[in-house]
Image (cartoon, rainbow, N blue to C red; front, side, top):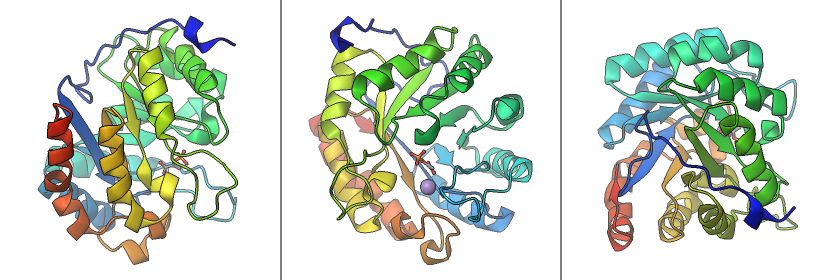
Length: 270
Ligand code: PEP
Ligand code: MN
């Protein structure tokens, strides 16, 4: 398909996640593990000056024997902690059956890389968020081209769910030094082909915490509208994606570290 033919989609930013002139940082643990773990990790996100927290209750794990998330109990923890701390929540939905309950507990629905082409899920999410203040973050599939990614987004927008944010999270290549390969050119290309905002997930792309800040700086320069990063109050103890979780100290310095790059791009880190 000729991607240049893809229509530009006008985005409404009613949930405030992406605002003009800003660079949004969403941070938090890969997975909600317990009330205490999520509270400690979310408190650090708040203290670092950020307004959006992430955390998975339904986890798409490669192995069926890995921890699958706390499900509805995890959603309760997400909304309890976020309302206590005054944060907004981004969390993943894997099953159309769970869309309604997730929307009761979270403002932004994440569609994971492994579900990017789950068209019935995309359509149902589009219909569910249409006319609401909820938004959706659509991760790029591990082996999806930019045009496939943009067309997947249109399964959501064509149902009326126009509050969609694209997320580049690394693609499969021959390279083994990183977990995936962060494709920053795709960020720039996507921004030229659509009006949808584009954010970057450097955590899943790198799979290593030492690369998360450098890749975040590069994302600002590559015209991204924000980041979604994994952070944990005790990274070594994380039940999922421990190697890529930023410790609290790194999170605390992140705003200050990124602001000079954002200033060069005419944006404020929020
Ligand atoms: C996640 O955000 O924890 C996740 C599983 O991401 P992805 O779908 O990009 O692998
Ligand atoms: Mn993860």
